[in-house]
Length: 105
Image 1 (cartoon, helix red, strand yellow):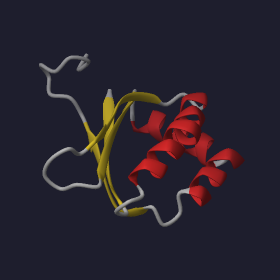
Image 2 (tube, helix red, strand yellow):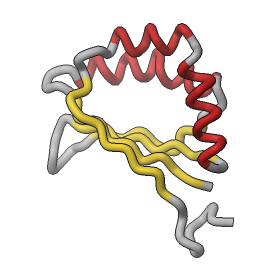
Image 3 (cartoon, rainbow, N blue to C red):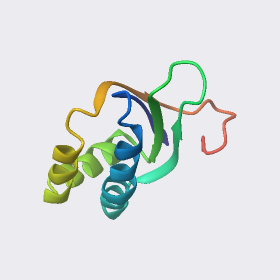
């Protein structure tokens, strides 16, 4: 198992419309293509205007196949066009569990 830990910095005053589009468009598309959401969070303290989302995969091959399937979906292109300009920065990490972590085996 691996997880994709992604942090987006959202344009100030765009968080509400961004989250509405994620909920109504992005998440349903991703679930349709087999993605498994572990969590979607908004920053309350520290660096504001950030969301962190964590997705679970069986392997890098699983991640790549799901992304390819999603990216070929015209609904995904529509979502990307509707959120254009809302994300100022993104950071992406692929993480593997420590041997004692739940889900490591």
